[in-house]
Amino acid sequence: MSTTSTNVTLRADTPFPTILVVEDEVLIRLVIADYLRDCGYKVHEAVSGEEAIAILQAPEVSIDVVFSDVEMPGSMDGFALARWVRANKPGLEVILTSGIERSADIAATLCEAGPLMKKPYSSQDVVDRLRQLAAKARRS
Amino acid sequence: MNAASVTVLPRRTPPSILVVETDVRIRCLVSDALRALDFKVLEASSADDALTVLEAMRIDLLFVALDLSGGRSALDVARLVRTRRMPTRIILASDGVLAKTVADDFGPVLRKPYETSQVVELVIRALNWPEVPGASRGTWPVEPR
Image (cartoon, each protein chain N blue to C red):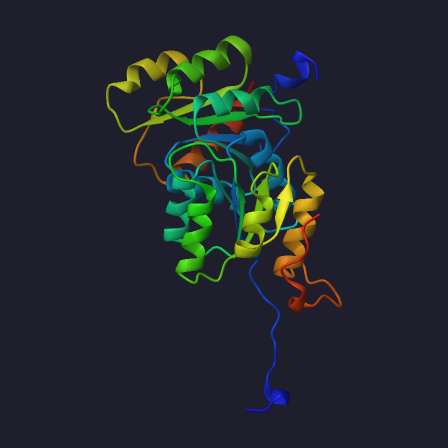
């Protein structure tokens, strides 16, 4: 697949974009992924930044939005993943979430998708943020 | 109660499947194929995560790769299911090294590399979902391919 076709941006004509949920806490990941699927989104799951990149580079998968925790084990945290996305998949939206207050300022410089979502978040807050992104895409 | 008084009602909620696989692309492909059949699919990348999920919710079928990375093994997960007598069917995926030794203990073993269609077929037969006309629960566990 060409680079152009893998750089999927949030399409205004797609009511339910495909979300990549990146979260190392398995029960948190299952809950939010399940909720998003129930809302109609197609969801892929990754447990680390490295897994997220593997999915983003997979030719058989198209992702519209990355929803990632900031604090993750391994060499790549959520910030590093957001930087990778910005460098390699420009136009792909990233929403970061963290339980650490000081992460907000860094996240603001990396995400066009609004401010950092504080943990704990409600599943509906995530859906609201995704809808805001879709509305923004329709306007632009 | 005689046999004539027993009515078997169709299952209303789709069975839940826990897919445990370290390789994210394989996990993603298998999970997607099963979700396409309306199974409720949960994903775990390690034995520890699988054990966490099994402690937290009912799982109807465990599909677990034997070559997991990390401290605890896939067999630890399968043993937990068996020792606690959980109502969970088990399908193992293996590169072949352990296949013969564990098949009788836990369930069928699918040899890697496998096609997702093979997983889907085994899962459908194990859970009888979507209901297969004429399928017999008595045939489980099936012979591994």
